[in-house]
Every structure is written in structure tokens, then in C-alpha cells.
Length: 332
Image (cartoon, rainbow, N blue to C red; front, side):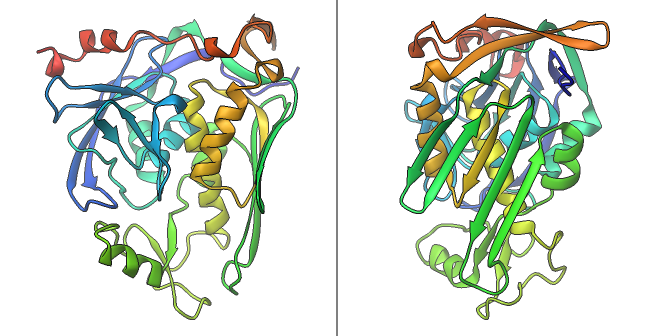
């Protein structure tokens, strides 16, 4: 099997930090991505709250999909997670604890690009544990009116998406990409979030999108033929590329790297959440596997098959409380 797969788990070589504003709150947010031990997965830590509550980046923690993907643990939430999660998954980070001092991930420039640059600057560290990957063995699909999403068996991780808008600027766009760190960084990471200018104005009136500017959102002109951003588009099809970015970020909430081909037609955060639940509910259609290097090839080993029950989905993570042991700032 000619697979482009790194069999070992990875984390960051050292912590890396950034500062930005929340897209909807407009508040300044300080964020640090910390290295984490094997089998930690991706976890968010609210250092601004008493006890520094930890929220695992898992689908069962999704609290809302209105305008963005929000996860929560009790009364603690973290909003607008999808761009950062896409960067982590796209760059091949398995284990990290993200410390932030507000309830919203900073929007940065509206893409995953700034997060990818941070990760590349600090570098990744290979860990002494094999990745446990969720391998699709049978197709799974979900349809909601004119929107749909499915996943098919595939030797790798691939995302194909389509959008359709009734305007001259976007119209119909399609994009397909093999999700590797190289292709993610080159083709997907820099694609920015977008919206119609009158929608942004309406959000402002309702106390939302308070941090949105032309520096972090593509604003589509009232004439539907151009954008208000002076620098224009980064790609002719930047809109569909950003939709692919959102899919990668949301699907990261499954907690394990995917082996499968995701095909999405006009999907959004709500459909992504429902689809991940459909995957969980169909254990006969997936299995967990690891890979070991044997000469020039990779040998797949099944570590959990469809004979196991759905409630045992993604059972490979360290207990949440254990992350406190290696984060001095929250030791108290």
C-alpha cells in the first residue's frame, strides 16, 4: 500500500503564542499552544477561569454550530475553533493543550495561515507512540434537504467539496485535495472566511462579528461581482477552499486522524456535527488502525474493529485531569 502517512504521533517542540481578537466578541485574546504527552489529543484550557477548566476537542463537546463551531465543558466554552483545529490537523499535530484567556479563539486573518506559520516556526516533535487512525471501511452518508456529506473508504485522507451561490462572484465552485501537511499549507491554509457585506452589517447590529474587519473577513460587495477587500482574493476559488478548511477543522473533532474520502455538497458546521455523530453511530463502517514501517512500505494493524461498540469510540486519550500535571501556570 503506497500511503503517505506518518505512523507516529507528533506534538510541538516547545510552546508557541499569539495574540488577536475574537471574531464575534471583538475582545483581545492571548493564546498559547503547548506540547502535550502521547494520547492527550487536542485540548483547550481556559486559564482565565477559576480552576483552569479543560475542554477536549471532541465532537461530544460541541455546544453550538451557529456561525462557528463552539465546544464546551459545563459552563466553560471555546468558540470559533475550526480554523485552529484545521491547522493542527493539517500540519499533523496529534497532541497539544491550547491555553487561552477568553472564550473565543482569535480570528487572526480569517484563515488558518497564521496558525500554520506558528507551528512551522516552532517545529514538531515525533513521539514514541503510534497514531491510532480512524479508517473508514464502508461508505457513510447524511443528507439534509439540498445539503449532503458522505465519507468513503480511501487509502489516505481526502476532502472534496462543492458550494453553490446565486451570484456572479462565487456561483458554483468545487475543490478536491489530498490532505497532507504540504498541500494543506500550500492550497488550503490561507483561504479566509467570507460573508456578504449586508450580512456582516446585520451581525454588527445584533452584537455579533464585532471583531470582523476587512483584515480578517472577505466582504462580498453588494453587487455580488467583487469584494471590498483592497487586496482582492488570495485564490480565484478562495471561497470553496475555505469551506474545505472548515471541513478539515470540524472533522478534527473526531479525535483521530481520518483515513477516508469526505465528499461534501453545500455543507456547514451543523451538518458536519450531525455527520460526525452518524459516523459514531455506525461502528460497523470503521475501525481503528495503526501503521508500522516495514522496509519501504507501511503495514496496517487493526487495533479496534467494528466488533466493538459505538460507546467505545475514540478511547485512546489521557484523562483530562492529567494535562494539569505538565502545565505549571495552572498547577494551582
